[in-house]
Image (tube, rainbow, N blue to C red; front, side, top):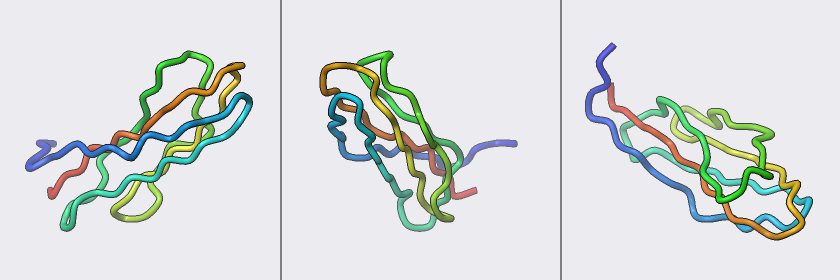
Amino acid sequence: MRLADWTQVFSNRVLVQPGGIGDAPVSCPAGSRPFGGGYLTDTLAMAAVESSPATFSAWDVVVRSADPNPHQFYAALVCSTS
């Protein structure tokens, strides 16, 4: 399969408090659909509880932090028109 006309989009950064949960939804541009998604963070003490399509044009990432300090994360999504 060839991935034509793809783009990568990112959610806003989400601050997760110690022991807390954060949610980062992200949507594809009009006319495109999610191909895959994930998240980026600056700590190994944050793990995804959920990372999956939310609709036909959006992705949602929920993480839980086990770190004693607050950390940020954001969702990343690859979208395609094919």
